[in-house]
Image (cartoon, rainbow over all chains, first blue to last red; front, side):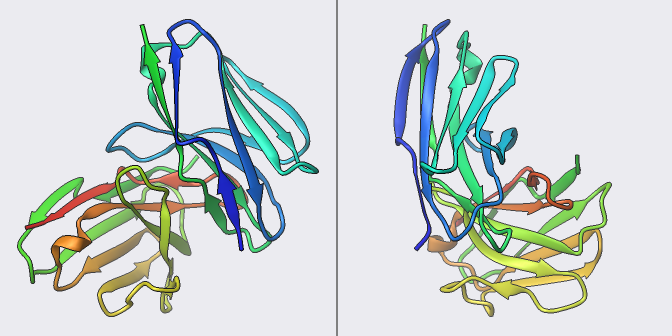
Length: 109
Length: 114
């Protein structure tokens, strides 16, 4: 079956750096996405990786290793507004999005 | 990117009644739209794929007679929860995927059945 694993919850301090990991086993691979979701709201797109390596976008970076079935989202200079759930999603060979359960990130002052 | 509008954002209904949720693609003609359900602290669960002009494709375990989907135009898909029960209370979200880009979501609908 298809499976995406991410930690359920993480805590970090304002101003610090946090890395959220995601491992996947899917039927084929056509890209990996990271989304941010605040409670009671729809997810918003953060990043997309289809080739191995690091994609940097401001305070957020995302890394992919296809051979290891592994990705991480790196958040730098954490702000209180970064408190949210972060969802990892993989697009499989049928171009269906398979979603992880999300990682709830708690930022403390 | 695509702009997706979902309405209503919140609805409370009595058990046994039906509720209609609308999803509009405002700047993109969507032949396909996706309907998700999300329980608290859980992942997005794909319920069905809405196809313009034809029947929706439902995921395994989703009752098509309970969750009616109509995709009558390239900009509008509706999800009707029929004979709602408290266990249908959830967060429902629609999305579109223009080409092979990322998914764009509506604002979501919080349904509470009392």
